Image (cartoon, rainbow, N blue to C red; front, top):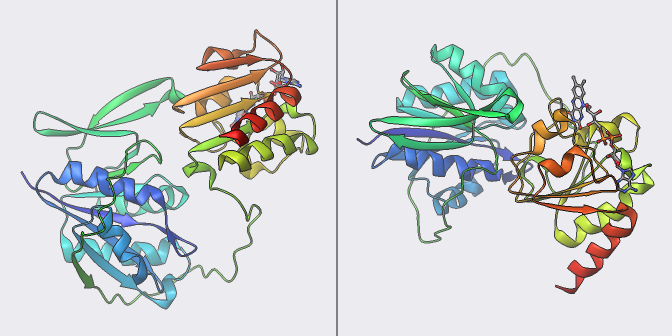
Length: 321
Ligand code: FAD
C-alpha cells in the first residue's frame, strides 16, 4: 500500500541538517511504493532542493517567506500546517532535533493526533509500521505501532541511514504561498556560544572529556585529536560543572543525546546519567586511569591509562593515516 509521507527539511545556517536526509530514508520505508515529499521551509532556501532530490525526495513543497528567516514555532507551524492541508499526508516525519522537539508536539496537537518521538528505527511488521524508541534513559527499547492517521514520528539523528546520493534524481517542486500571521516572537539576532566545529548531535565522531581533564586547558589534547579525526568535542556534566567547558557540550540525561559512529570518552567515570546520552554510540572507546570505572562496562575498547599520555599518542597515530 502506497502512502504519502511529508518530511520536514530542516535548514540551519543555509545548509540542510543531515537528519532531514535520514528522515527522507525513514519516509521511504513508511511510504512503500507511495511518495515522500520534502517540505522545505525558510527564506532563500530553494537552492537546497537538488540535495533533497538527490537523497530520495520524490517531490518538494517549498514555502518561502521573509517571516520564516529564523525558526519560530508560530511561523513554522503555520507553514507546515499549510503543507499538511495542501497534501493530506498519511504520515509525517521530523528529525528529533531541538527544532523538531519544539515543533512536532505543536503540530500533533493542532492535528489532534499522537506523536511517536525519538525513534531509532522504522520497519514493517505485517501490516503495521513499527517504530523503535529508547525508554528509561536508554536502558530499554520499546516498539510502537502508530494507529492514528496521519502517523507522526520524530527520528533520532544518526540512527537511520540516509539513502545513497543519486545526482540524477530530480522531481517536481510545488511552491506554496503561505500568509504567515501574528508572529508572537521575532528573532532579531542569534548569538552562538560555540560558533565553530561539527554539530554535536550530528557528529560521526565525538571526543568527550570529563572531570579527568582537570581544567579548561586539559581539553586541548582532546581538541587536537578531534581536529585530526574531524570530530566534535563533548563533555560530561562533571566537566561542565567544574567550568572546564560550556554546558552546550554536555552529553547525558540532562544534556544532549548523541549516537556517533565513534565516541571516545576521556576521564569520564560513566555515571548512569552520562550513559543515558551516549550508550547508543556505535563504537565506544574509554580512556580512564581507574580500571574499575563504570565507563568500561559499556566500552567496546578500554584503555587504562592517563589521558594526557594516551590522547596525544592516538593523535600522532591518526595523523599517520
Ligand atoms: P567523575 O565521576 O569525577 O569521573 C572522573 C573520571 O576521570 C574518574 O573515573 C577518574 O578515574 C578519571 N580520571 C581522572 N584523571 C584522569 C586522567 N588523568 N586520565 C584518565 N582518567 C582520569 N552527568 C553527565 O555527564 N550528563 C548528564 O546529563 C547528567 N545529568 C545528571 C542529572 C541528574 C539529575 C544528576 C543527579 C546527575 C547528572 N549528571 C550528569 C552527573 C553524573 O551523575 C556524574 O556526576 C557526572 O557524569 C560525572 O562526571 P565525570 O565522569 O566527568 O566525573
